[in-house]
Length: 202
Length: 202
Image 1 (cartoon, each protein chain N blue to C red):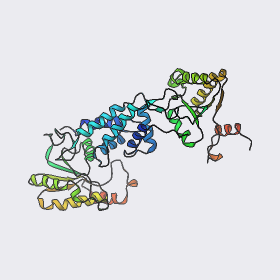
Image 2 (tube, chains in turn yellow, purple; image 1 turned 90 degrees about the vertical axis):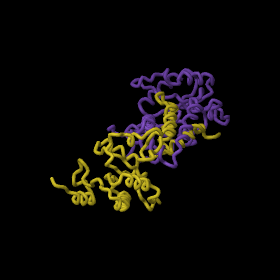
Image 3 (cartoon, rainbow over the protein chains, first blue to last red; image 1 turned 30 degrees about the horizontal axis):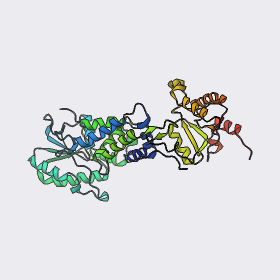
C-alpha cells in the first residue's frame, strides 16, 4: 500500500507557494488547500493577477520605481519639485515616504545598498544612473540621501556623498534621532548619540 | 501632486495575495514585490501551478479526498483494507494519519463538522454519502470515527454513531488521552478524565 499524499498538481502548487518569502511548508499547504477548497477562493483571479503584474510592470528606467511601459507615476507627475531628488535603497522605500507626505520631489531607487559580504558593489546598484542624473541637472538639484541607518546604509551614504562631492550639487541626508512616540528608555545608545549630535534650536 | 503608489497591476496582485489565509497587507506587499523583483522568483510558474491545480484537481466522489479526474490515489489502491473505513472531518486530516502509518484502510472525508452556530447541518456534510457507503458494505466494514476532540467534533461523532446504530456495522472511535511526549502537568482536566476512562490492561 502506498501512503496517500496530495495528487501531483497540489504538491506542485505547495512547492511554488513555499518559495514565497516568509512562507513555510505548513502555510504553503494551508494556502493551497484554501485555494482549492474554500468557496471564497478565486485561484484563477490570483493566477491572472500574477501574470498581469509580471507582464505589465517594469522598473522605471529613470527613477527605478515600479512603472508601466507607458509611464511612471512619479517621473511623469509635473507637480513634483524637480529641485529635490531623494535617493532610497529599494523601490518599496518610496511608499512610506509618499504616505508620510513629507516629500514632494522626485526619487532615485538604487536597488539595494553596498554590501561587500553579499558581493554588492557600486556597479550592481543604480549609482551610475544617479551620477548621470545629477550631472544633467547642472547643480540645480538637492540630493537627499534617505538610506537606512544600518552599517551598509551608512557606507552607501558615505560612498554616494564622496561621488557627488565634485558635482557642485547640494547633498543632504535625512535626520537620525528619537523615533516619534519613543521614550529615551527604549532608545539604544547610538540613536541617542545621533539624536544629541543632530540637536536643533527650539 | 498625487501621492505615488504601486501601479494598478501591482495593487491588484497585492489584493489577491491578501485574500490568502494568514496573509496580512504587509506580507501580501512583500510577496508581490518579491515576485516582481527577486531574481529567484518565478511568478509565471506560480500562476501555472495555481491554474493546473485548480483545473486538474477534483474532490473524489467516493472518499472526498483530493483526486484527479482519472483516479483517486486512495480509492484506487487495491492494497488497502476494505473492511476499515476511517471518517475524518477534512480532506487534509487524511495526511497526518497516512504519515503516521497507523491506518491502512479507506477514508471518508465529511468536509467539515456539525456546527449550529456556523449553520453547518448534516446535509451540508458528506453524511448521506457515508450512510450509503456503509449500507452498501452489508455490515462488513468497521467505521472508525476519527473526528476532533472539540465540542463540534464530539457532537458530529455522536450524531454519526446514532445514524449508524441500526446498520449492523461496527462503529469505533480513536482514543483520547495523553499526547505522546506530554507530561501530566501539561494535560488539561478533560484530557486526564478521558485518559483515565480509556485506561487499558498493561
